[in-house]
Image 1 (cartoon, helix red, strand yellow):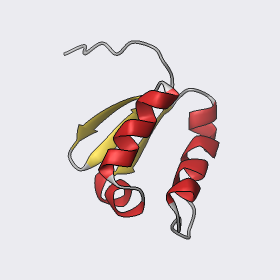
Image 2 (cartoon, rainbow, N blue to C red):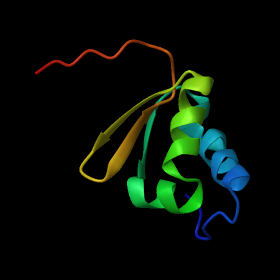
Image 3 (tube, rainbow, N blue to C red):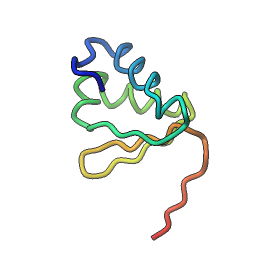
Length: 75
């Protein structure tokens, strides 16, 4: 994320979707508290599947898979 926090949910999502990792279909993470502060959990949980992204939550982080590939737990 940039040095300045996003002011609106639109700015948050524009920054997230504009990141190199998201554009390349890679994996990114965001702190749960930041997502809840800037856009709200409900909005975030609605937007991610709309984009075809899978999200996992662990240890205060959202891990966002910016692609539609299946997830397979290895261990």
